[in-house]
Amino acid sequence: MAALYITRRIKNIIMIGVVVVALIIAFDKSQIINTFLKPSDIMGQTPKEAIELFEESKYNTKLELQYTSANMQKIKQEIVDLVLEHDLKIKYSKFSSNNSTWLIEIPRNMYKQIIDKLRNHDELTMEELVQIDDQLLSESVEERIKDNEKRKEILNEGFKNARTAYDQENYNQNIMKTERIIDSLKTVLQDQEKFSKNIYTKLDISKFVSRADVTQDAFKSFLLTFVISLLFISVALFVIYFIIILFTKTFTVLGIKTSHGRGSRYGSGYNYGSGSSYGYGYDYGSKKKIKRKYIRRPRSEEGESSEEHKDKDSEEK
Image (cartoon, rainbow, N blue to C red; front, side, top):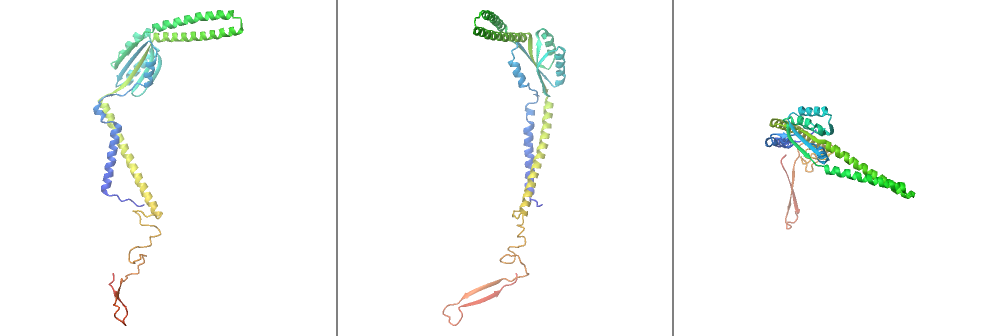
């Protein structure tokens, strides 16, 4: 297979270009420059779903505790043991290598005992307690339940005294509607009691990475990305080179003249421009070059031929 001729200068330029591109990709992917601008980092992030559930909940009291630790596994196991020991109800949980998040209910009668254990950690970086006075809402719901129960009694009396089937059906429909309202209000009241008796707690543990760990991870990522990029680009260039050679060889076989081919398979027996002035390529040894010179005589000279033909032989090539 024919090979493309590439000068040493072009080869050096290609090699330098490949290395430069691989370095750019490695710098971009590893973010190694940020290592010096941001020597330490909190790697874990609280899941967005957990934040939304916590903020949109209707509990009267909410507690948020955040921990930052280089050794997540130790404090994570302690919290798991605490949850199992007191049989706390877990509403949400999600774990990853850099973050662990729980949403749990802590009964008010156990709050003091449990919160003391949760606070007994040096990794605790933030504690926030939010309380909402929901007493007025509970009283309002209770009053509405009483009003609808009185209305139901009146409707029952009307149903008993109804004279026609139409009136009985009408009273019956209103009684059923009132019962649904009462059941709905009782559910709201039960939820309010649950929300008031339990403290909705979000426990969040994030991994803290020191400067040495950040630098080490960044350099590992940089070297790995650089090597992979270098190999990938090199293989890509080799494939492109191979495809060009393949096309060149194919064109030659098909008789298409290229800058790296010698012409068509049908014209290989001809030798244009060597020897014969017509270029058919036949070579019978030495040939002589003939010059012909024509001289025109004046018309006044009669009896002689009007032209004289002189031939001169030239020397062999």
